[in-house]
Length: 107
Image 1 (cartoon, rainbow, N blue to C red):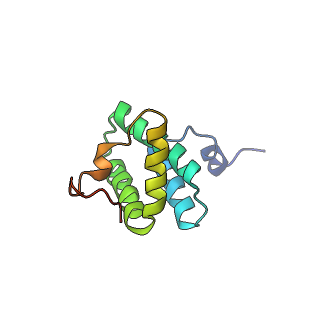
Image 2: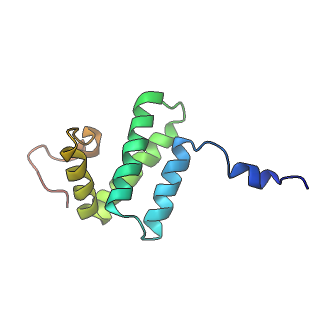
């Protein structure tokens, strides 16, 4: 029995945009935890930093996800930032580039 092309798609190596889609789906379903958000955002951020993706829409989607968290679930973003910092690496500064440098809040 031949394998449908739809099933073949299940086994492709996920791209950065696929990980962003997963993040968005988990966020929309209200099933995203701080630990999962931290793990996915670290992977996504590293891939965007290393691979210099030619598809600029991936960077835009990443920025939209961070902006959504900052606006709608600032406590989750703050927890992700705090957890990221405890591992000796500061969270990406572009997450905060739109903020007033003297403003330390996320809300």
